[in-house]
Length: 122
Image 1: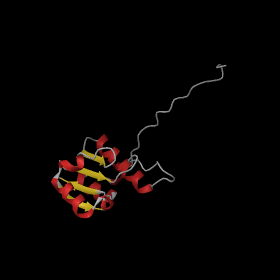
Image 2: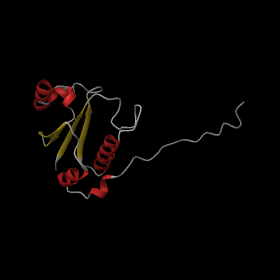
Image 3: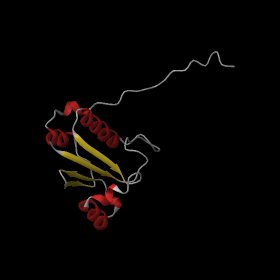
Image 4: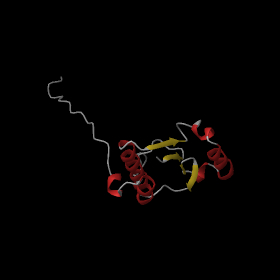
């Protein structure tokens, strides 16, 4: 089974919905990663702002950062080898790497909203 690791630039979260506007590319990647993880595939995502230590554990990532700097992120590793730099894999690439139909990469986490009736509160 393939193992995919995504080393993201520093950002508040990986969903793409934070900040002044929604980033559709980050939203697409978050949805695809969620779908793959839900199906048991080995895929991890690391954010430079939250997990800087992960960027020093893998020599290829450390060398990448020293050579190109954090502005060149994301960097994508497939089975320990850098396969992409400065861009995220498309859904077609993900489907090939994991032998899965691209339609299966559109899952989204369920909305766990809670409704509270405050009409009786005074």
